[in-house]
Amino acid sequence: MPTKKLRVLLAVHKTLLPPENPTAAEIRDSEWSAEYEVATALRDMGHEVKFVGLDDHIGDMRTAIWEFKPQLVFNLTEEFDGVAHFDQNIVSFLELLRVPYTGCNPRGLMVARDKALSKKILSFHSIPTPAFQVFPRHGSTKLATGLAFPLMVKSTTEEASLGIAQASVVQNETQLKERVAFIHEHLDTDAIVEQYISGREVYVGVMGNMRTEALPVWELNFGELSEQAEPIATRRVKWSSAYRKRYKISSGKAELSEAQETEAQDICRRAYRALGLSGYARMDLRLDAQGKFYVLEANPNCHIGEKEDFAQSADSKGLTYSELLWRILNLGLRWQPNRG
Image 1 (spheres, rainbow, N blue to C red):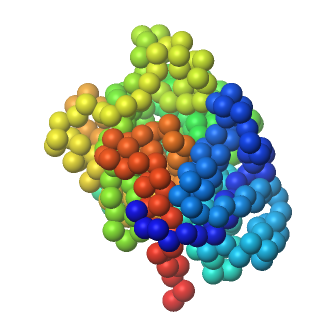
Image 2: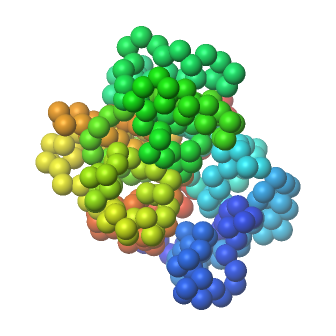
C-alpha cells in the first residue's frame, strides 16, 4: 500500500459525528460506527483526518476546506438538509471548488437516486430489471397493462430501505392503493411499483471510474423469516440487530456456480457504467428460480463500515479494510470531472 500521507476531510452528517474517545460499547450501539471506523482506519494509515458535520449549511464545508486545506474530502454523506437526492449537491460544490472527493460524481448520484430514471436507462441498455410504473403524488393509481400481482411498492428516491416493510409486497388493488398512499403521505415522494421477483437477494460491490472491478457476490440470507413472511430487505432486516438475531438473518458469500458469479458481476459492471457511476457502489439484484438475475437498484456511496457487506465482500477477495479505503481514496484522487 502506498505510503503517501494525506490531509483528509471526512464529511459526515452532523448527527453522526463520533465523540472523542468513545468506549467499545458506545461504538457497538451507535449509528456513527462507520464514520468512526473510517476515521480510525485512515489515522492508523498515517493520514491526518478532520471531521466536518453537515446539516443544512454548505458554508460549514467551505469553512473547513479553507481552514484545513484538505488534499481530499472523504464523502460519507447520504443526504443534505434531510433530502436524500440533495447529496449530489455536496459533491457538485466540491467540484466547483476543485477539491477531490471520494465516491460517486454528481450526475451518477442524481441518476441512481431516481429509481425510475435509472430503470429506464438500464432497460435501454438491455440490462434486466423488473417491469415498473411510477405513481406520482396527487396522481392516478390505475395499474398499467402488463403489470401483474404480486408487486413491490417503494419510494422513488429514498434509500436504506426507508418505507419498505412486509406491507410493501402487495397482492391486489386495495393493498396497492393503500401502500402507494403510505409512500405519498409518510415519505412525501412519488411511489415506484415494480414486478415482485421472488428469489434470492444478492449484492455485488463495484469499484472504479473508467475501469471497473466487481467484488465477490454477496447474499442476504433470510434465515427463518422466509417461513413466515416475504424474504425482502425491509428496514428492520437491514438495521435492527435484534430482528436479525430473532430470525437468524445473516449475509455472506453467495453459493453460486462460477458461471453465475461471472454473469452477476458482468451485469453489475454494465449497469455501473450505464448509470455513469464512479468511485464505488453496491448493486442490488434478485436471482429468480429460473436462474435469471434482475438489477433492483444501484447504491453509490454505499455503507462501508468494516463489518458491512461491501467491506466484507472485499475482505473475502483478500482486500483488508485499510487497503479497501486506500483504493477508494485513490479513485477519488484520480477522478476528473468533465469540464468540457
